[in-house]
Image (cartoon, rainbow, N blue to C red; front, side, top):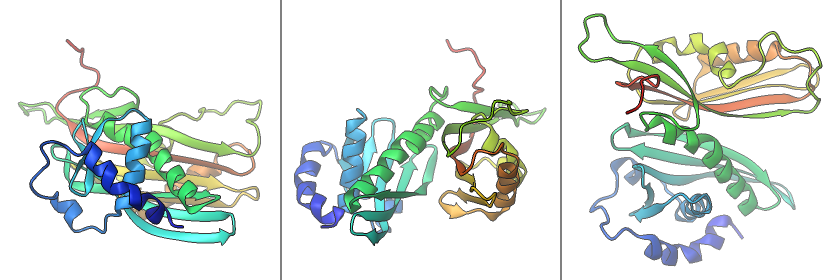
Length: 274
């Protein structure tokens, strides 16, 4: 039984239970043109509720208290064996003030059943990506490291800061770390700073941008990398990420993965809070 079928029967009662008493009169335009999956969006709502994140239903999407609006699309399910499934979903996010045009990211996961794989992908997104989006819509991030550049013109009346919100890093290595320390120990900044030249043009804009960074090296030293900007392939960063992975100390199979957001703010994260 597919996850959509297994969750679909609960969808109507769940939506009624959590529906806002002041539902919006129309569906958000970005979501209206997408093939949103009600069962998968329900699954995301349950993951968010388990993390004590309050939400309401608005038409075909979830509305969080901080203004984020979320919906899920099914991409594919691949049966690898009787008890091994690989799934891919795509979560779309909108914030009326920060990124009304919307952005998206894919969730890849594996599990013993289709439902387990889907839920694993959604849980990882909540812990890795949503954390960054929530910090990116705050004047002062609570959970993420921030790289900040003052982009104000000398004659500008209003200050402007380009900020890179660095999410937690998913890191796996099959061998323990060597006793000899790296010249520059791995930190949340590394994936982005090592590929930063590829993002030069994006940093010059004022756009709100979500970036997925991934680099790996296998037991035989074969390198792989992937980068997406707002859910779409971004090839300029791939070679930079491979060169970075090539410098890692030998730890067998290893990968490092991270989600970051670039945004512009009128407030510096270094400003003293009242």
